[in-house]
Image 1: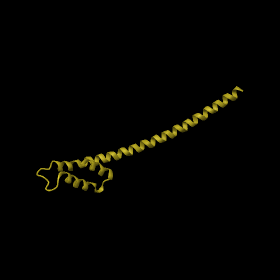
Image 2: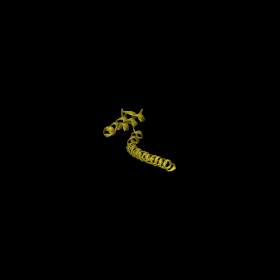
Image 3: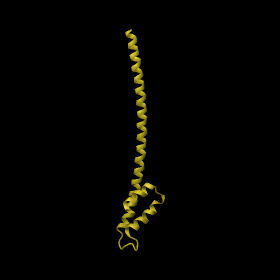
Image 4: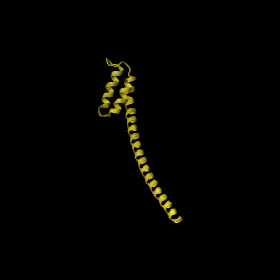
Length: 102
């Protein structure tokens, strides 16, 4: 009688261990997917930062230009320069600079 109860408990525990191991595998896979998504997001942000950083010299030239810029104001000059840069850029890049110029 005791061996039957003992065997049933052992089987129950083994089943629970297998279910737990399966859940651990599912969680590990989910975490790996999240890590990959985060890495891609970081790469996109780094591309955006590099693009913004590469445009700063152009804005610096506009800001520190001596002798005035004719009829165009500083904001207009920056917008013209920005529009030239944005021809092949994404919307997020455009949004960042529009926020900076407003």
